[in-house]
Length: 268
Length: 287
Image 1 (spheres, rainbow over the protein chains, first blue to last red):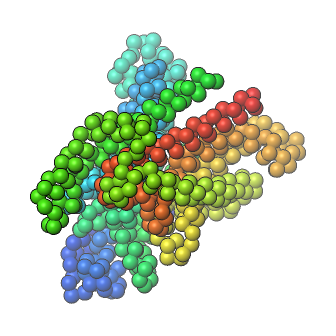
Image 2 (image 1 turned 60 degrees about the vertical axis):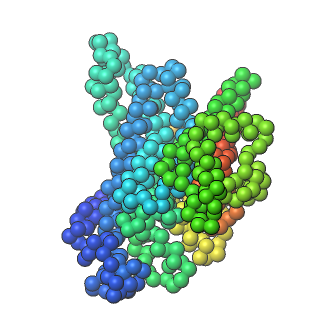
Image 3 (image 1 turned 90 degrees about the vertical axis):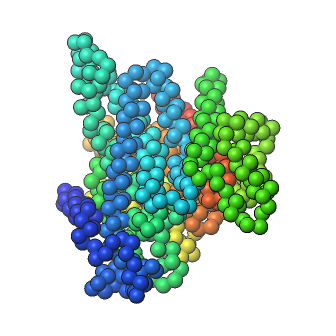
Protein backbone atom coordinates (compact mmCIF):
# COMPACT_ATOMS: atom_id res chain seq x y z
CA UNK A 1 0.00 0.00 0.00
CA UNK A 2 2.89 2.30 0.82
CA UNK A 3 4.38 1.66 -2.65
CA UNK A 4 1.07 2.54 -4.24
CA UNK A 5 0.94 5.81 -2.33
CA UNK A 6 4.46 6.70 -3.43
CA UNK A 7 3.53 5.93 -7.05
CA UNK A 8 0.37 8.05 -6.69
CA UNK A 9 2.36 11.00 -5.34
CA UNK A 10 4.94 10.63 -8.12
CA UNK A 11 2.24 10.52 -10.83
CA UNK A 12 0.51 13.59 -9.40
CA UNK A 13 3.79 15.50 -9.15
CA UNK A 14 4.77 14.59 -12.74
CA UNK A 15 1.30 15.56 -14.04
CA UNK A 16 1.36 18.81 -12.05
CA UNK A 17 4.84 19.76 -13.26
CA UNK A 18 3.95 18.89 -16.88
CA UNK A 19 0.76 20.96 -16.61
CA UNK A 20 2.56 23.92 -15.09
CA UNK A 21 5.35 23.67 -17.65
CA UNK A 22 2.91 23.37 -20.58
CA UNK A 23 4.32 26.54 -22.07
CA UNK A 24 7.73 24.87 -22.43
CA UNK A 25 6.67 21.27 -23.14
CA UNK A 26 3.87 21.83 -25.65
CA UNK A 27 4.84 22.21 -29.31
CA UNK A 28 2.32 25.05 -29.72
CA UNK A 29 -0.32 26.99 -27.83
CA UNK A 30 -3.62 25.29 -27.05
CA UNK A 31 -5.45 27.36 -29.68
CA UNK A 32 -2.80 27.28 -32.41
CA UNK A 33 -4.21 25.68 -35.56
CA UNK A 34 -2.09 23.61 -37.94
CA UNK A 35 -4.49 24.17 -40.80
CA UNK A 36 -2.60 21.98 -43.23
CA UNK A 37 -3.02 18.92 -41.00
CA UNK A 38 -6.40 18.65 -39.31
CA UNK A 39 -7.31 15.28 -37.78
CA UNK A 40 -3.70 14.11 -38.13
CA UNK A 41 -2.59 10.83 -36.58
CA UNK A 42 0.16 10.83 -33.93
CA UNK A 43 3.60 11.73 -35.28
CA UNK A 44 6.92 13.09 -34.03
CA UNK A 45 5.58 16.62 -34.47
CA UNK A 46 2.15 15.96 -32.91
CA UNK A 47 2.50 13.29 -30.22
CA UNK A 48 -1.26 12.74 -29.93
CA UNK A 49 -2.20 13.97 -33.37
CA UNK A 50 -4.41 16.98 -34.06
CA UNK A 51 -8.14 17.57 -33.64
CA UNK A 52 -10.76 18.55 -36.24
CA UNK A 53 -9.52 22.14 -36.19
CA UNK A 54 -5.86 21.15 -36.52
CA UNK A 55 -4.95 21.93 -32.89
CA UNK A 56 -2.24 19.83 -31.28
CA UNK A 57 -3.90 17.36 -28.88
CA UNK A 58 -0.84 16.98 -26.66
CA UNK A 59 -0.66 20.76 -26.13
CA UNK A 60 -4.36 20.89 -25.34
CA UNK A 61 -3.97 18.00 -22.89
CA UNK A 62 -1.18 19.79 -21.02
CA UNK A 63 -3.05 23.10 -20.87
CA UNK A 64 -6.29 21.26 -20.01
CA UNK A 65 -4.62 19.46 -17.13
CA UNK A 66 -3.32 22.83 -15.94
CA UNK A 67 -6.83 24.31 -15.89
CA UNK A 68 -8.35 21.32 -14.08
CA UNK A 69 -5.51 20.75 -11.63
CA UNK A 70 -5.24 24.40 -10.65
CA UNK A 71 -8.90 25.28 -10.48
CA UNK A 72 -10.28 22.13 -8.83
CA UNK A 73 -8.18 22.86 -5.69
CA UNK A 74 -9.41 26.47 -5.86
CA UNK A 75 -13.03 25.28 -5.90
CA UNK A 76 -12.19 22.83 -3.11
CA UNK A 77 -10.70 25.76 -1.16
CA UNK A 78 -13.92 27.76 -1.54
CA UNK A 79 -16.10 24.85 -0.48
CA UNK A 80 -13.85 24.03 2.49
CA UNK A 81 -13.89 27.68 3.57
CA UNK A 82 -17.68 27.76 3.40
CA UNK A 83 -17.87 24.45 5.25
CA UNK A 84 -15.54 25.81 7.94
CA UNK A 85 -17.63 28.96 8.32
CA UNK A 86 -21.07 27.33 8.42
CA UNK A 87 -20.07 24.08 10.16
CA UNK A 88 -17.68 25.83 12.54
CA UNK A 89 -20.24 28.43 13.58
CA UNK A 90 -22.92 25.77 14.04
CA UNK A 91 -20.66 23.63 16.23
CA UNK A 92 -19.25 26.60 18.15
CA UNK A 93 -22.53 28.28 19.07
CA UNK A 94 -24.75 25.16 19.28
CA UNK A 95 -28.44 25.55 20.19
CA UNK A 96 -30.75 27.18 17.66
CA UNK A 97 -27.86 28.43 15.52
CA UNK A 98 -26.68 24.84 15.07
CA UNK A 99 -30.20 23.58 14.37
CA UNK A 100 -30.97 26.24 11.79
CA UNK A 101 -27.54 25.87 10.17
CA UNK A 102 -28.09 22.13 9.86
CA UNK A 103 -31.47 22.71 8.17
CA UNK A 104 -29.60 24.92 5.71
CA UNK A 105 -26.97 22.19 5.24
CA UNK A 106 -29.73 19.57 4.77
CA UNK A 107 -31.26 21.82 2.16
CA UNK A 108 -28.06 21.87 0.14
CA UNK A 109 -27.61 18.13 0.62
CA UNK A 110 -31.15 17.50 -0.60
CA UNK A 111 -30.75 19.22 -3.95
CA UNK A 112 -28.53 17.11 -6.19
CA UNK A 113 -25.98 19.81 -6.95
CA UNK A 114 -25.03 18.42 -10.35
CA UNK A 115 -28.62 19.19 -11.30
CA UNK A 116 -28.41 22.78 -10.05
CA UNK A 117 -25.01 23.20 -11.60
CA UNK A 118 -26.27 22.08 -15.00
CA UNK A 119 -29.29 24.39 -14.69
CA UNK A 120 -27.24 27.44 -13.77
CA UNK A 121 -24.40 26.70 -16.18
CA UNK A 122 -26.88 26.22 -19.04
CA UNK A 123 -28.39 29.66 -18.47
CA UNK A 124 -25.06 31.42 -18.98
CA UNK A 125 -24.79 33.32 -22.27
CA UNK A 126 -23.53 31.28 -25.20
CA UNK A 127 -20.93 33.94 -26.03
CA UNK A 128 -19.36 33.91 -22.54
CA UNK A 129 -15.57 34.28 -22.70
CA UNK A 130 -13.56 31.08 -22.04
CA UNK A 131 -11.80 32.62 -19.03
CA UNK A 132 -15.14 33.67 -17.52
CA UNK A 133 -16.60 30.20 -18.15
CA UNK A 134 -13.68 28.60 -16.29
CA UNK A 135 -14.09 30.89 -13.31
CA UNK A 136 -17.89 30.53 -13.23
CA UNK A 137 -17.77 26.73 -13.56
CA UNK A 138 -15.30 26.22 -10.74
CA UNK A 139 -16.81 28.94 -8.53
CA UNK A 140 -20.19 27.23 -8.87
CA UNK A 141 -18.57 23.93 -7.92
CA UNK A 142 -17.11 25.55 -4.82
CA UNK A 143 -20.29 27.35 -3.80
CA UNK A 144 -22.56 24.33 -4.26
CA UNK A 145 -20.37 21.53 -2.92
CA UNK A 146 -19.72 22.55 0.69
CA UNK A 147 -22.67 21.01 2.56
CA UNK A 148 -21.35 17.50 3.25
CA UNK A 149 -18.06 18.93 4.55
CA UNK A 150 -19.96 21.40 6.77
CA UNK A 151 -21.62 18.51 8.59
CA UNK A 152 -18.25 16.92 9.32
CA UNK A 153 -16.76 20.23 10.49
CA UNK A 154 -19.81 20.89 12.68
CA UNK A 155 -19.47 17.47 14.35
CA UNK A 156 -15.73 18.02 14.85
CA UNK A 157 -16.23 21.49 16.36
CA UNK A 158 -18.99 20.22 18.64
CA UNK A 159 -16.72 17.47 19.94
CA UNK A 160 -13.90 19.95 20.43
CA UNK A 161 -16.12 22.35 22.36
CA UNK A 162 -16.81 19.53 24.83
CA UNK A 163 -13.13 18.64 25.24
CA UNK A 164 -11.23 19.34 28.42
CA UNK A 165 -8.59 21.62 26.91
CA UNK A 166 -11.27 23.92 25.50
CA UNK A 167 -12.97 24.02 28.90
CA UNK A 168 -9.63 24.88 30.44
CA UNK A 169 -9.00 27.59 27.85
CA UNK A 170 -12.41 29.07 28.50
CA UNK A 171 -11.82 28.95 32.24
CA UNK A 172 -8.61 30.89 31.64
CA UNK A 173 -10.59 33.61 29.90
CA UNK A 174 -10.17 32.68 26.23
CA UNK A 175 -13.28 33.41 24.22
CA UNK A 176 -14.49 34.54 20.84
CA UNK A 177 -11.93 34.93 18.07
CA UNK A 178 -8.97 34.19 20.33
CA UNK A 179 -10.42 30.81 21.30
CA UNK A 180 -11.17 30.04 17.65
CA UNK A 181 -7.73 31.14 16.42
CA UNK A 182 -5.59 29.54 19.12
CA UNK A 183 -7.54 26.43 20.05
CA UNK A 184 -10.22 25.50 17.56
CA UNK A 185 -8.52 26.18 14.24
CA UNK A 186 -5.29 24.25 14.99
CA UNK A 187 -7.33 21.25 16.12
CA UNK A 188 -9.69 21.42 13.14
CA UNK A 189 -6.86 21.75 10.62
CA UNK A 190 -6.72 17.98 9.99
CA UNK A 191 -10.47 17.72 9.40
CA UNK A 192 -10.45 20.72 7.06
CA UNK A 193 -7.47 19.42 5.11
CA UNK A 194 -9.14 16.01 4.74
CA UNK A 195 -12.31 17.68 3.44
CA UNK A 196 -10.24 19.76 1.04
CA UNK A 197 -8.44 16.74 -0.43
CA UNK A 198 -11.67 14.74 -0.65
CA UNK A 199 -13.26 17.59 -2.63
CA UNK A 200 -10.48 17.98 -5.23
CA UNK A 201 -11.09 14.72 -7.20
CA UNK A 202 -14.84 15.15 -6.82
CA UNK A 203 -14.63 18.56 -8.50
CA UNK A 204 -12.31 17.27 -11.25
CA UNK A 205 -14.88 14.55 -12.06
CA UNK A 206 -17.84 16.95 -11.86
CA UNK A 207 -16.15 19.36 -14.23
CA UNK A 208 -15.50 16.42 -16.57
CA UNK A 209 -19.19 15.51 -16.50
CA UNK A 210 -20.13 19.08 -17.32
CA UNK A 211 -17.49 19.10 -20.06
CA UNK A 212 -18.88 15.97 -21.74
CA UNK A 213 -22.37 17.52 -21.66
CA UNK A 214 -20.93 20.67 -23.25
CA UNK A 215 -21.47 22.82 -20.16
CA UNK A 216 -17.94 22.99 -18.83
CA UNK A 217 -15.14 25.28 -19.90
CA UNK A 218 -15.85 27.11 -23.19
CA UNK A 219 -13.77 26.67 -26.36
CA UNK A 220 -11.00 27.25 -27.20
CA UNK A 221 -9.72 26.95 -23.59
CA UNK A 222 -9.24 23.24 -22.79
CA UNK A 223 -9.84 21.38 -19.54
CA UNK A 224 -9.70 17.65 -18.81
CA UNK A 225 -13.50 17.64 -19.04
CA UNK A 226 -13.89 19.61 -22.25
CA UNK A 227 -11.29 17.40 -23.99
CA UNK A 228 -13.58 14.42 -23.40
CA UNK A 229 -16.21 15.89 -25.73
CA UNK A 230 -14.21 14.51 -28.61
CA UNK A 231 -15.04 11.01 -27.38
CA UNK A 232 -18.64 11.45 -28.55
CA UNK A 233 -17.37 11.28 -32.13
CA UNK A 234 -14.85 8.54 -31.36
CA UNK A 235 -17.60 6.28 -30.08
CA UNK A 236 -19.82 6.81 -33.09
CA UNK A 237 -17.20 6.90 -35.84
CA UNK A 238 -13.98 4.89 -35.62
CA UNK A 239 -11.84 3.89 -32.70
CA UNK A 240 -8.64 5.97 -32.54
CA UNK A 241 -6.88 4.97 -29.32
CA UNK A 242 -4.90 8.21 -28.94
CA UNK A 243 -8.14 10.13 -28.50
CA UNK A 244 -8.67 8.24 -25.23
CA UNK A 245 -5.50 9.67 -23.66
CA UNK A 246 -7.31 12.58 -21.90
CA UNK A 247 -9.74 10.04 -20.39
CA UNK A 248 -6.84 7.85 -19.24
CA UNK A 249 -5.07 10.88 -17.72
CA UNK A 250 -8.27 11.89 -15.94
CA UNK A 251 -8.81 8.39 -14.55
CA UNK A 252 -5.18 8.10 -13.45
CA UNK A 253 -5.18 11.53 -11.75
CA UNK A 254 -8.46 10.91 -9.91
CA UNK A 255 -7.35 7.39 -8.95
CA UNK A 256 -4.12 8.80 -7.51
CA UNK A 257 -6.13 11.19 -5.35
CA UNK A 258 -8.32 8.27 -4.26
CA UNK A 259 -5.29 6.20 -3.31
CA UNK A 260 -3.87 9.06 -1.25
CA UNK A 261 -7.11 9.58 0.64
CA UNK A 262 -7.19 7.50 3.72
CA UNK A 263 -10.02 4.96 3.84
CA UNK A 264 -11.19 6.34 7.17
CA UNK A 265 -11.78 9.73 5.58
CA UNK A 266 -14.43 8.34 3.25
CA UNK A 267 -16.85 7.19 5.86
CA UNK A 268 -20.63 7.59 5.82
CA UNK B 1 -44.38 10.06 17.87
CA UNK B 2 -47.03 12.25 16.18
CA UNK B 3 -45.21 15.39 17.27
CA UNK B 4 -41.96 14.10 15.79
CA UNK B 5 -43.73 13.20 12.54
CA UNK B 6 -45.30 16.67 12.43
CA UNK B 7 -41.90 18.29 12.94
CA UNK B 8 -40.47 16.16 10.13
CA UNK B 9 -43.28 17.22 7.81
CA UNK B 10 -42.74 20.90 8.66
CA UNK B 11 -39.01 20.45 8.02
CA UNK B 12 -39.74 18.70 4.72
CA UNK B 13 -42.05 21.54 3.64
CA UNK B 14 -39.50 24.19 4.67
CA UNK B 15 -36.66 22.45 2.81
CA UNK B 16 -38.76 22.07 -0.33
CA UNK B 17 -39.88 25.69 -0.27
CA UNK B 18 -36.30 26.89 0.13
CA UNK B 19 -35.01 24.45 -2.50
CA UNK B 20 -37.49 25.79 -5.06
CA UNK B 21 -36.57 29.36 -4.17
CA UNK B 22 -32.82 28.65 -4.37
CA UNK B 23 -33.28 26.91 -7.74
CA UNK B 24 -35.33 29.79 -9.14
CA UNK B 25 -32.96 32.44 -7.75
CA UNK B 26 -29.80 30.77 -9.08
CA UNK B 27 -31.34 30.39 -12.52
CA UNK B 28 -32.60 33.96 -12.44
CA UNK B 29 -29.30 35.58 -11.39
CA UNK B 30 -27.36 33.76 -14.11
CA UNK B 31 -26.44 36.51 -16.61
CA UNK B 32 -28.09 35.01 -19.69
CA UNK B 33 -31.55 34.47 -18.19
CA UNK B 34 -33.32 37.48 -19.71
CA UNK B 35 -32.12 36.60 -23.22
CA UNK B 36 -34.30 34.30 -25.31
CA UNK B 37 -33.03 32.71 -28.52
CA UNK B 38 -36.46 33.33 -30.09
CA UNK B 39 -35.49 37.01 -30.14
CA UNK B 40 -33.09 36.11 -32.96
CA UNK B 41 -35.93 34.80 -35.11
CA UNK B 42 -36.18 37.35 -37.92
CA UNK B 43 -39.63 36.13 -38.99
CA UNK B 44 -41.22 37.37 -35.74
CA UNK B 45 -42.93 40.75 -35.71
CA UNK B 46 -41.86 43.58 -33.40
CA UNK B 47 -45.01 42.95 -31.36
CA UNK B 48 -44.14 39.27 -30.85
CA UNK B 49 -40.58 40.14 -29.87
CA UNK B 50 -41.92 42.67 -27.36
CA UNK B 51 -44.24 40.00 -25.93
CA UNK B 52 -41.30 37.57 -25.53
CA UNK B 53 -39.25 40.25 -23.77
CA UNK B 54 -42.19 41.08 -21.48
CA UNK B 55 -42.69 37.39 -20.60
CA UNK B 56 -39.00 37.06 -19.70
CA UNK B 57 -39.08 40.25 -17.63
CA UNK B 58 -42.18 39.13 -15.71
CA UNK B 59 -40.36 35.88 -14.81
CA UNK B 60 -37.25 37.78 -13.76
CA UNK B 61 -38.87 39.09 -10.54
CA UNK B 62 -38.08 35.92 -8.57
CA UNK B 63 -40.14 36.52 -5.36
CA UNK B 64 -43.19 37.49 -7.43
CA UNK B 65 -42.71 34.57 -9.79
CA UNK B 66 -42.23 32.14 -6.90
CA UNK B 67 -45.25 33.37 -4.91
CA UNK B 68 -47.38 33.13 -8.03
CA UNK B 69 -46.01 29.65 -8.67
CA UNK B 70 -46.74 28.51 -5.07
CA UNK B 71 -50.29 29.86 -5.30
CA UNK B 72 -50.86 27.88 -8.48
CA UNK B 73 -49.19 24.82 -6.91
CA UNK B 74 -51.73 24.87 -4.07
CA UNK B 75 -54.46 24.68 -6.70
CA UNK B 76 -52.68 21.69 -8.25
CA UNK B 77 -51.44 23.69 -11.24
CA UNK B 78 -47.75 23.09 -11.96
CA UNK B 79 -47.72 25.43 -14.94
CA UNK B 80 -46.80 24.87 -18.56
CA UNK B 81 -43.33 24.07 -19.89
CA UNK B 82 -42.15 26.96 -22.06
CA UNK B 83 -39.88 24.81 -24.22
CA UNK B 84 -42.08 21.73 -24.70
CA UNK B 85 -45.39 23.63 -24.59
CA UNK B 86 -46.98 20.94 -22.45
CA UNK B 87 -48.41 20.98 -18.92
CA UNK B 88 -45.61 20.19 -16.45
CA UNK B 89 -47.93 17.80 -14.64
CA UNK B 90 -48.30 15.66 -17.79
CA UNK B 91 -44.57 15.69 -18.37
CA UNK B 92 -43.89 14.55 -14.82
CA UNK B 93 -46.56 11.86 -15.06
CA UNK B 94 -44.87 10.53 -18.19
CA UNK B 95 -41.25 10.79 -17.06
CA UNK B 96 -41.26 10.13 -13.32
CA UNK B 97 -42.13 6.38 -13.51
CA UNK B 98 -39.24 5.84 -15.97
CA UNK B 99 -36.74 7.45 -13.60
CA UNK B 100 -38.17 5.72 -10.52
CA UNK B 101 -37.88 2.37 -12.26
CA UNK B 102 -34.27 3.07 -13.30
CA UNK B 103 -33.53 4.33 -9.78
CA UNK B 104 -34.89 1.17 -8.15
CA UNK B 105 -33.06 -1.23 -10.52
CA UNK B 106 -29.77 0.72 -10.41
CA UNK B 107 -29.85 0.91 -6.61
CA UNK B 108 -30.72 -2.77 -6.24
CA UNK B 109 -27.84 -3.78 -8.53
CA UNK B 110 -25.39 -1.34 -6.90
CA UNK B 111 -26.27 -2.55 -3.40
CA UNK B 112 -26.07 -6.19 -4.46
CA UNK B 113 -22.61 -5.67 -5.96
CA UNK B 114 -21.28 -3.25 -3.32
CA UNK B 115 -22.49 -5.12 -0.26
CA UNK B 116 -21.51 -8.55 -1.63
CA UNK B 117 -17.99 -7.36 -2.45
CA UNK B 118 -17.60 -5.63 0.92
CA UNK B 119 -18.85 -8.71 2.77
CA UNK B 120 -16.62 -11.01 0.73
CA UNK B 121 -13.59 -8.78 1.37
CA UNK B 122 -14.27 -8.70 5.13
CA UNK B 123 -15.13 -12.40 5.42
CA UNK B 124 -12.14 -13.62 3.45
CA UNK B 125 -9.71 -11.16 5.10
CA UNK B 126 -7.68 -11.64 1.94
CA UNK B 127 -5.54 -8.70 0.87
CA UNK B 128 -5.93 -9.73 -2.77
CA UNK B 129 -9.71 -9.60 -2.46
CA UNK B 130 -9.60 -6.18 -0.79
CA UNK B 131 -7.20 -4.93 -3.45
CA UNK B 132 -9.51 -6.19 -6.21
CA UNK B 133 -12.52 -4.52 -4.59
CA UNK B 134 -10.60 -1.27 -4.11
CA UNK B 135 -9.32 -1.30 -7.68
CA UNK B 136 -12.75 -1.99 -9.15
CA UNK B 137 -14.45 0.70 -7.05
CA UNK B 138 -11.54 3.10 -7.60
CA UNK B 139 -11.85 2.69 -11.37
CA UNK B 140 -15.56 3.37 -11.51
CA UNK B 141 -15.36 6.26 -9.06
CA UNK B 142 -12.76 7.87 -11.36
CA UNK B 143 -14.80 7.65 -14.56
CA UNK B 144 -17.13 10.56 -15.30
CA UNK B 145 -20.74 9.35 -15.41
CA UNK B 146 -21.28 10.88 -18.84
CA UNK B 147 -18.28 9.00 -20.32
CA UNK B 148 -19.40 5.63 -18.95
CA UNK B 149 -22.87 6.37 -20.30
CA UNK B 150 -21.30 7.03 -23.74
CA UNK B 151 -19.51 3.67 -23.60
CA UNK B 152 -22.79 1.97 -22.76
CA UNK B 153 -24.51 3.69 -25.68
CA UNK B 154 -21.78 2.38 -27.97
CA UNK B 155 -21.99 -1.15 -26.59
CA UNK B 156 -25.81 -0.99 -26.57
CA UNK B 157 -25.85 -2.12 -22.95
CA UNK B 158 -28.67 -1.05 -20.63
CA UNK B 159 -28.05 2.46 -19.19
CA UNK B 160 -29.30 1.31 -15.82
CA UNK B 161 -26.23 -0.93 -15.57
CA UNK B 162 -23.99 2.12 -16.12
CA UNK B 163 -25.84 3.90 -13.31
CA UNK B 164 -25.42 0.87 -11.03
CA UNK B 165 -21.67 0.71 -11.73
CA UNK B 166 -21.34 4.41 -10.91
CA UNK B 167 -23.24 4.11 -7.62
CA UNK B 168 -21.62 0.86 -6.48
CA UNK B 169 -18.14 2.25 -5.54
CA UNK B 170 -19.53 4.56 -2.86
CA UNK B 171 -21.72 1.81 -1.43
CA UNK B 172 -18.80 -0.63 -1.46
CA UNK B 173 -16.45 1.78 0.32
CA UNK B 174 -18.93 2.82 2.99
CA UNK B 175 -20.03 -0.78 3.59
CA UNK B 176 -16.46 -2.05 3.74
CA UNK B 177 -15.47 0.62 6.26
CA UNK B 178 -18.54 -0.01 8.41
CA UNK B 179 -18.11 -3.78 8.40
CA UNK B 180 -14.38 -3.49 9.05
CA UNK B 181 -15.03 -1.16 12.00
CA UNK B 182 -17.56 -3.63 13.40
CA UNK B 183 -15.13 -6.54 12.95
CA UNK B 184 -12.56 -4.64 15.00
CA UNK B 185 -14.88 -4.42 18.05
CA UNK B 186 -13.67 -6.32 21.16
CA UNK B 187 -16.81 -8.47 21.44
CA UNK B 188 -16.32 -9.73 17.87
CA UNK B 189 -12.79 -10.79 18.79
CA UNK B 190 -14.23 -12.59 21.82
CA UNK B 191 -16.87 -14.32 19.66
CA UNK B 192 -14.17 -15.43 17.22
CA UNK B 193 -11.95 -16.61 20.04
CA UNK B 194 -14.84 -18.70 21.35
CA UNK B 195 -15.00 -20.45 17.98
CA UNK B 196 -17.97 -18.79 16.29
CA UNK B 197 -17.86 -19.35 12.51
CA UNK B 198 -17.49 -16.44 10.05
CA UNK B 199 -21.14 -16.50 8.94
CA UNK B 200 -22.39 -16.68 12.53
CA UNK B 201 -20.14 -13.76 13.49
CA UNK B 202 -21.42 -11.78 10.54
CA UNK B 203 -25.11 -12.50 11.12
CA UNK B 204 -25.24 -12.30 14.92
CA UNK B 205 -22.49 -9.90 15.89
CA UNK B 206 -21.40 -7.69 12.99
CA UNK B 207 -24.70 -7.05 11.21
CA UNK B 208 -26.58 -5.70 14.27
CA UNK B 209 -23.81 -3.11 14.88
CA UNK B 210 -23.50 -2.05 11.26
CA UNK B 211 -27.20 -2.16 10.42
CA UNK B 212 -28.27 1.33 11.65
CA UNK B 213 -25.56 3.02 9.62
CA UNK B 214 -26.24 0.81 6.61
CA UNK B 215 -29.89 1.85 6.78
CA UNK B 216 -28.81 5.50 6.89
CA UNK B 217 -26.67 4.79 3.85
CA UNK B 218 -29.77 3.63 1.93
CA UNK B 219 -31.11 7.20 2.09
CA UNK B 220 -27.77 8.71 1.05
CA UNK B 221 -27.43 6.23 -1.82
CA UNK B 222 -30.78 7.40 -3.24
CA UNK B 223 -29.45 10.96 -3.34
CA UNK B 224 -26.23 9.72 -5.02
CA UNK B 225 -28.28 7.69 -7.53
CA UNK B 226 -30.39 10.70 -8.53
CA UNK B 227 -27.19 12.68 -9.19
CA UNK B 228 -25.81 9.82 -11.32
CA UNK B 229 -29.01 9.22 -13.29
CA UNK B 230 -29.09 12.79 -14.58
CA UNK B 231 -26.09 12.58 -16.95
CA UNK B 232 -26.78 8.91 -17.73
CA UNK B 233 -30.35 9.66 -18.86
CA UNK B 234 -29.19 12.73 -20.78
CA UNK B 235 -26.47 10.86 -22.68
CA UNK B 236 -28.31 7.56 -23.19
CA UNK B 237 -31.53 9.30 -24.29
CA UNK B 238 -33.66 7.68 -21.57
CA UNK B 239 -36.98 9.56 -21.38
CA UNK B 240 -36.85 10.19 -17.63
CA UNK B 241 -36.57 13.12 -15.25
CA UNK B 242 -32.81 13.45 -15.87
CA UNK B 243 -33.26 13.90 -19.60
CA UNK B 244 -36.15 16.30 -18.97
CA UNK B 245 -33.95 18.36 -16.62
CA UNK B 246 -31.23 18.42 -19.23
CA UNK B 247 -33.67 19.60 -21.93
CA UNK B 248 -35.16 22.19 -19.56
CA UNK B 249 -31.70 23.48 -18.67
CA UNK B 250 -30.75 23.79 -22.34
CA UNK B 251 -33.99 25.58 -23.18
CA UNK B 252 -33.83 27.81 -20.05
CA UNK B 253 -37.30 26.62 -19.11
CA UNK B 254 -37.77 28.17 -15.64
CA UNK B 255 -41.21 26.65 -14.77
CA UNK B 256 -40.00 23.18 -15.62
CA UNK B 257 -36.67 23.61 -13.78
CA UNK B 258 -38.35 24.86 -10.59
CA UNK B 259 -40.80 21.96 -10.64
CA UNK B 260 -38.03 19.45 -11.26
CA UNK B 261 -35.97 20.92 -8.41
CA UNK B 262 -38.94 20.46 -6.10
CA UNK B 263 -39.62 16.89 -7.28
CA UNK B 264 -35.98 15.85 -6.95
CA UNK B 265 -35.67 17.51 -3.53
CA UNK B 266 -38.90 15.86 -2.40
CA UNK B 267 -37.64 12.42 -3.46
CA UNK B 268 -34.29 12.94 -1.74
CA UNK B 269 -35.69 14.31 1.53
CA UNK B 270 -38.37 11.60 1.69
CA UNK B 271 -35.76 8.89 1.10
CA UNK B 272 -33.43 10.33 3.76
CA UNK B 273 -36.25 10.71 6.29
CA UNK B 274 -37.58 7.23 5.57
CA UNK B 275 -34.20 5.59 6.04
CA UNK B 276 -33.70 7.67 9.18
CA UNK B 277 -37.07 6.48 10.52
CA UNK B 278 -36.25 2.82 9.78
CA UNK B 279 -32.82 3.26 11.38
CA UNK B 280 -34.35 4.73 14.54
CA UNK B 281 -36.98 1.97 14.75
CA UNK B 282 -34.23 -0.62 14.31
CA UNK B 283 -32.05 0.98 17.00
CA UNK B 284 -35.02 1.23 19.38
CA UNK B 285 -35.98 -2.39 18.66
CA UNK B 286 -32.42 -3.58 19.26
CA UNK B 287 -32.21 -1.65 22.54
